[in-house]
Image (tube, rainbow, N blue to C red; front, top):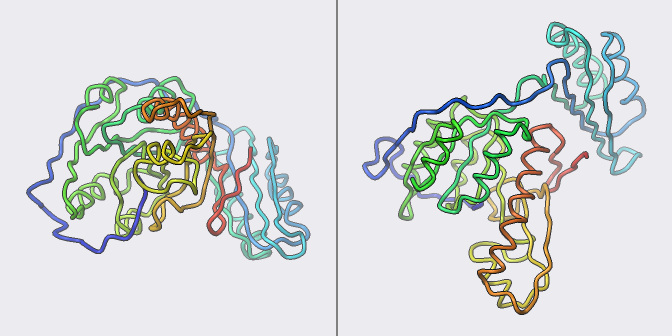
Length: 318
């Protein structure tokens, strides 16, 4: 689910209806990563010389540019975005000096914002799920096969149904029930589990609405998969709404979570054709395939820093 502001905070500590169950992890295969590459993300006001400045800094340190993508929404003072992957032997040792030089040339010289990340360290992710397991298990399967450059730190669910399956992947599983209108106690437990342990969160058909307080306090990006082609059919039961409306396409949308329900910046979307003959159950089955594909692409792109948020939309570099 997505997020809206929830002013009902309640007791943040020791609420009696919250239970916490951890299942011990089993061995898992390592995530495949690059050991000699880093990714640089640059964004700010467009002006002459940005690409040259980046190239000069990297060249100074004998770094080779592996790929470079850029976009300007207006070359005359508009917004500029650039993603650069570069590498060299022994990169880790020189990254601090590269970052100091980037600070001098980009942040101070061009007043640009930038992030620099060593690609040998995969991003840590927590997956939130409920009873529907198709998106959750698809992510875990892709992770085990080395198809996603992430480290799944934990799975958190308000139902215990998937505990054994998650455990079979070697992933820690936490059961945190969430019932009633006041979710503050459950969210307090979530924050304890997540603090300092994850770089982003994925809602893999997590059927709970996150409060604005949680979104602000957790301090990391949250990606949600919504089972419709937004902005159509916001909220619950989109397949039933789609059937009633008689649509010829159903789809899925992966987007960042904000306090506005199902209205965060869109990362990826896709659709599949349907007809009047399909029942709601058949729409759900066909839509589930799209949900899995869309969410896995969004997670992959975010994990590789291919997505840059700009206002309420995104720039996604291929």
